[in-house]
Amino acid sequence: MLVFRFSWTHDQGWATPLPEQPDTSTQLVLMFGPVDAPDAAWFDHVAHVWPAAARVYCSGGGQIMDGVVDDASVIVTAVQFSSTSVHPIVRDGADLGHCASLGADIGRALADVPALNHVLVFAEGVAMNATKFLTALNETLPTTVKVSGGLASDGLALTRTVVGLNAPPQSGQIVAIGLAGDALVTATGSVGGWEAFGPERIVSRSELSNVFELDGENALDVYKRYLGEFARELPGIALLFPLAVWQRDGGPVSVRTILAVDDAVGSLRFAGDIPQGSIVRLMRTSTDKLIDGAASAARIAAARLAADSAAVAPGLTICVSCIGRRAVMRSRVEEELEEIVFGDRTVPVIGFYSNGEIAPPSDGRDFAQAVLHNQTMTVTTIGER
Image (cartoon, rainbow, N blue to C red; front, side, top):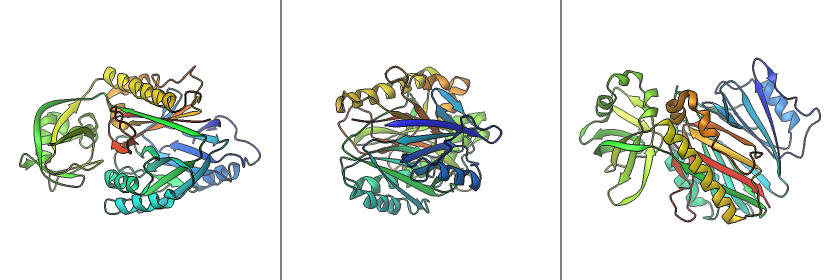
């Protein structure tokens, strides 16, 4: 497995020249960049350089490469697998009403791929219901297949995201990359670092990812009351105050971030579902706790990789961290990236700040299917035997 990385900006062009001749041995190109993606000619150039590759673009709220966050650059990573095959799928129409059908469609399309091992998902980050999508995807994929990735972002704007496969990216798209082969070894870790505060409240009226009432009171009014003078900065300020969500019958706690508010009806829209009857509390954190969470995510991924195949060193690490974490850490944001270390620091690290993270839970359970996380650092390591 060979990994080559490049970066490009509108002002400076390519920091490192691309290959002069077309490279047909590269099977996967991951591109993380701003929501205002380069023009079509740029994508034509990338296609000329890597004509046989699945070329994925996902917008982020800051791009990650080796401990550095860059808002202006497109980070381009070309991957040459030795024994792994790549199976790309793109679907459009990712809105609140079609996410379940899209998840089922993608799952069915990948389910019959021989020796399917892992699926990377990069998806619309504002207009879709990721919970419904992942539920349907998990139901149609073999239970042995791991899924990880994230929702695209546009930073604190929370208005438009873009994703694309082998073409300029668009809003409303989902890209899934099936990775197949017995030589492939992957592992994930996903940890937050947030703590709940304030009283518990019951979600007395909700519909999918929209919450209308808390304890019988207008949900937006309750939330604004807690925010006080910060309420005028909604919806962006909501990234600093997500909700902890759990059910009356127990089970794992989910963290949910607000993506939009509707002043007309007083509702809050989240990145994933919050069922009616759920118990919720506000959450807060500190930079040090977030940094510790990132370190824990890396340790979990490293331990899982070693447990699967101690002889395999990761060839690539993909980090998807929530944009809300960056909003809290501000100038210290790169400190969490410094914690993502494997071996002697020679493993390439790429990624982006997202509107939601996708990975199995990291709560000590044995292998589990992927769920939507918010406010976590999610780490995916990829290697080959």
